[in-house]
Length: 311
Image 1 (tube, helix red, strand yellow):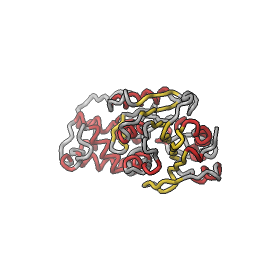
Image 2 (cartoon, helix red, strand yellow; image 1 turned 120 degrees about the vertical axis):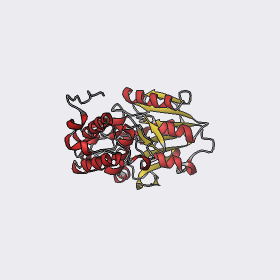
Image 3 (spheres, rainbow, N blue to C red; image 1 turned 90 degrees about the horizontal axis):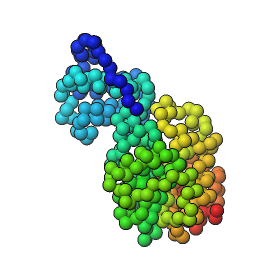
Image 4 (tube, rainbow, N blue to C red; image 1 turned 45 degrees about the vertical axis):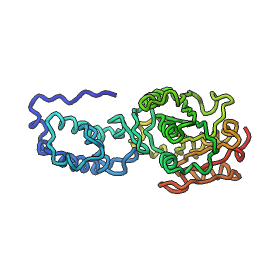
């Protein structure tokens, strides 16, 4: 998505009026935080508050290291850079576009991913579970294949390719657009030979293929929550969020179909947001293991192949 830059007839100092008083990065950081707070923005796409998001947006825009704010705080901002910073701050506020889309970048588990509105912004508790070995006790000892179902930007497939270097990875999604974003990320990490992309409506195009691990962060937003979503989320593909009245539309299909795509000692792991009660209501007899995450113990569940319903 491209936008025309601001065009000014006069010199930059006068065009910016009061903003001409913003000389240093420290000044612009303070201004951005105030602007974001006054606009009551929602932060849920990589940063948790106005300060972190402003710092990330400004550092990225100035091509500065994202982890080194301090040395640059008192550096002066040029007129051309001022114009750029003003534009991106205003777009974040007035259009409510997630910063990840503004800078085409998102971070998950220490990995950088390209992202644009064709795919949901990467965010998943699987990043920490994969990083700290939270899935390890449940996996087959000879783990050699994994499926990232509803892959979106390809982020979890890429994380799994690093965590399980000997495993064949499949990244599957129904969206051709999302798979194009995933392909870019797969190539960025040099994993074209390790990760296979498959366009499929859940398991439909996977025929009789089986995996030792299926990880999925599927759509799970309830109808009521969709209607109340902050504006930032409306820039994301709605098919990656909406999942019917109780948020279980896709999860039900996954639980019903997963067994025939898992090896005999394979494992299915599913992220469901705050929908634990809906999962347990829909599958009261399924022995689910709820995994501890930084967001609580009701975000991700795991179930072994032999306990899943035969499809």
